[in-house]
Image 1 (cartoon, helix red, strand yellow):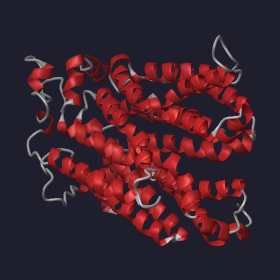
Image 2: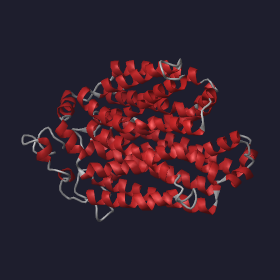
Image 3: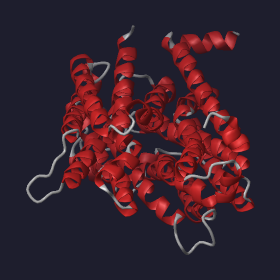
Image 4: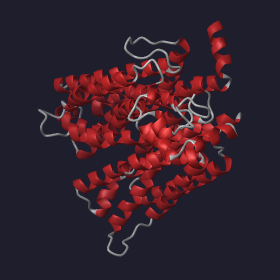
Length: 49
Length: 453
C-alpha cells in the first residue's frame, strides 16, 4: 500500500488512468485470443465464424 | 485535463487514424481485386506497396518533427494523406495511366500516413518525464497500432464492397483531425525543450545518431519486433490457410471464403496482442526502471536507463524462443496449440516494440525525432524481408521459416545488441566516428550543455 502511494505520487494523477486504459486494452486482446481459440477448437460448430 | 494529457490524446487519436488509413487498402483487397480484375500477383504488389514508403518517409518525418514541431508535421501528413484518400474515392485513368494504376499510386501515398508514427513518438517524448516515458509512449503507440486490426475487422463489415465510400469518409475524418492537431497541438512542454530539439537537427546530429552502435542495436531490436509484427500481419492469413489445410477443413471451413475467414481470425490474434499489450510493455519498462532490475551480467548497469535495456533484452529472448516454438508446433500440425503460441508470440512482440521506445527518448532526449526516425524507419524493412524468407522455396516446408529467422538472424542481432549495450560509460560515445567529429568542437559530446542528458 505504501509502495502504491509512493508510486502514485511519483507519477501524478494521469498515471492511474493510463494504467486503467492499458488493462482494458489487454483484456480486449485476451478476448480476441479466446475467440480465436474457440474457433480453432470448435470450427463452424461454434456458429459465430 | 492537464495539457500533456491533451497532447497524448491528440497524438494517439491521430496515429490511430493514420494507421487505419495505412491498412485500409488491405482491408478491401478482395473487393478491389474483383472490381479491377486483378491477379494474385497484382494484389500482392498492392499489399506490399503499403510498406515501401515507410523506411525513408519515417527518417524524414522524424527529422522534420525536431525541426518544425510535431504538431505541424503530423498535421501536414494527415492533411495530404486525407486529401489523397478523398481523391482515391474517385480514381480514374489519367494520361497513360489506367484507373487501377491511378488508384495504386494514390493508395501508396495514403499509406504513407504510417510515417507519422515517429512524429507522435517525438511529440510524446517532448511532454512526458523520463520515469513515465514507457507507459506514455506505449499508450500512444499501442492504441494507435490497433487501428490496423480495427480496420481489418470493421471496415468490410461497415462498407461491404464499397471501398470508394470508405476511402472518402476516412479521408474527410483524416483532414478534420489534421486541423485539430494543428490548432490544439503544442510542440513541447516548454520553449526550451522545443528549441533544443530544433537546434540539434542538423546534418551532423543526424549522422551522430545514425552511427551510434546503441542506436543501430535499437533499430535491429525494433526490426525484430515491429518489423516482424507488420511482416506477420501480411504473412499469417496465408500461412494458416496453406500450413493447416486439413485441420481447417476438419473444422468445417471448406469454401475459399470460409477458409479466409478462419485463417484471418487466427492471424488476428497476433495483431491484437502485439498492439494491445504494447502499453503494458511500456509500463513494465517503467516498473523495471523503478525497481532497478538489471539481471543480465553482460549488459551495462550504470546508465540512467539500464533497467529498461535489460527489460528489452528479455523481450528479444522471448521473441526468439516463441519463433522457434511456432515452427515446432507447426511441424507437429497442432492448430489450436499454434494459435495459443501465436498469442504469446504477439505479447512478446509487444514487449519488444514497447521496450524499444521506452529507451529511445531517454537515450537521445535532445534528438528524439531524428533518433525515432532512424530506429522506427529503417527497421520497417523487416516487414518486407521476413516474409520473403518465410516463403522461401529452399525451406523443407512452410513452418520452418520462423526458426530459420530466429536462429539465423535474431540470435546474431541479439548478440550485437548485448555488445552495443555493454559499455559502462556513455554508449553514445561508441560508434563510427567520435561525437566530436559529428557534433563539432563546441558541442563536444552527447552530454554537453544543451546536449543529451
